[in-house]
Length: 414
Image (cartoon, one colour):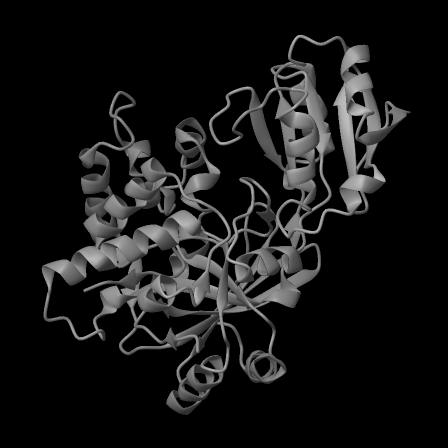
């Protein structure tokens, strides 16, 4: 049984919705975030990445950053940029990219479901990133960035949600700078809310698609509040965290590509000879190669593109993690040939989301890197199978598009 719970959302006032909505905090580095907010006084990044308004010599994890985030949040509320709904509600959030739509329910999910593995994870978190969001949530006393969850699609839930969308106008309908369409509906009917809560109780598990650090941080803040309030009864808002939940058959995972700084002291010829031990190598030439099936990889090096196809033995691997394309590339090429020991910390490797296209891979390989690999996207079924098996995916296995916007929904903990 998976729990969802309505909440009295803090949301942008109508006239500020488009200006406040911002991509997630972790899409940008400090310089990019600072550039992004130029000429945008209402951007939620001014709260989510409050260092953009402080001197550049202040560390991004300094408490002054979180204090300023709280000051900015209070300012947005006091000036009426944000308003809070009068009672607990559910919301619907639809994103549209290139004609493809995904419609999710905005709600709160249970800290206990996370602790009991009803909300399943598929990747590890880094402590420094976790602590950053712990501080942010704690200082603001709010979840400001939704966790992106999915579940195995249920026809009854889909029917209820789709009927509501057909018969009700969205309260917000706008297109962001990156040409993503955003629509929001508010569900106020108590009977409908109760019905949806009941149907979601029939769902066995939720799966974190994106937002592992936000989820882990929200849970750790809740545990801290529980320790500070030993007589808590479980109904307090801090026992729940902000989520947007989509059915699995609506989600789109893009390729998450790799670039490597050097060939580990190998010539191109020697490197390719070693690759041929486990992959069939076909020279493509100047035209970029984008894989169209599993066990296929693109490779760009020394001005040419190649198609790599995993040999038969690698196709017989019977393990949900080791059979992933990202695992095969690491286990049989990146680690043994290029000497990449740990992709989480090795500075010789970087990752490029598929939204940036193959030209970005070529550019990186021709400038600050030397070799690039284009990947076939991990499937949502693979993610769910790995989470159900209690295993973890390699880092940077999935790139979800479109990205949820922050600032559209805020959940107060107190």
